[in-house]
Length: 360
Image (cartoon, rainbow, N blue to C red; front, side, top):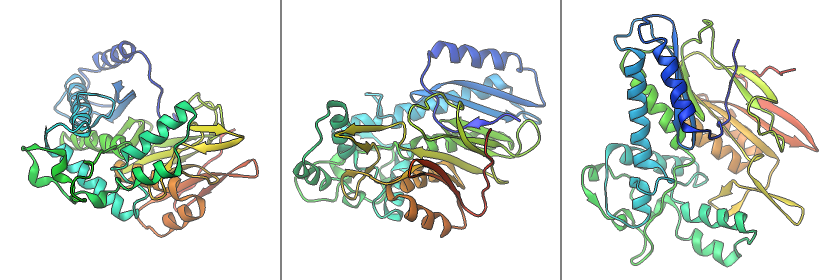
């Protein structure tokens, strides 16, 4: 049975993946039963969508084009790497026209910030940027700098919703509810955007009648059965330094529970900086302004959609092992798998409804 690896696929040549997608689809364009896989390049990596085409009126080529149209729309609206995106122009202080996608993810970001007590904060872009530059240059920010930047972050300084602004030309300052003269908010959706992207693609697939699907855009959304007629199987990479080949070393695999679910893993082990013999994680706690320091190496969350799984996986990586366990156990609507370091040994903890199988 094929195992889908949950970690993000590294960027490769765009032309190879578009060619692969076109080849796969062209072989299946007359099919009206069985599974089809389309794949390509998106959001700094690759995407793949595997689904059962039985009973659909649309052919795979049309479905592929629609999926890629959705991904282009997401890039144009929410990408922090595309300097011409709505988000990038908003963060640069330019007026932007707010669309439904921008307003929806903004509201989701506010809800997640409130639910996590500020541990997942989409308005902390200045904080993430400050530490990011610090990691690259080896010059960490001072306590004074951290406090200064942190005071300008927090969705509590922003309007709760901007749905009333859809279709209008918006000044960044207009959503700020902080003190007069303060800097306008700068947003970063890295903690939820890829999960949200999976959900949008899944929405489209549901709308055309698909029920058996796996959407993989680094994060995962799946429903129904895989081509073997059983639950989708997910692999979790072993969280050790240097394990950069996806699927080469797995900590374990598990079958996704019945029904629609988002499945997301967040981890620190591939993103860290060592200074004076101490390892600093790239996960920043917006509440303190500093990198986290705990034994939790990766958190995998299964939730009702991929956006929430994405947010909750990040939340677990911020709050650490014991609080993450308590959080997962307190929720009947999610399952979780945590991998942590116990004196040099990798230990796996899973919630009651999730069982992982070791890989030999």
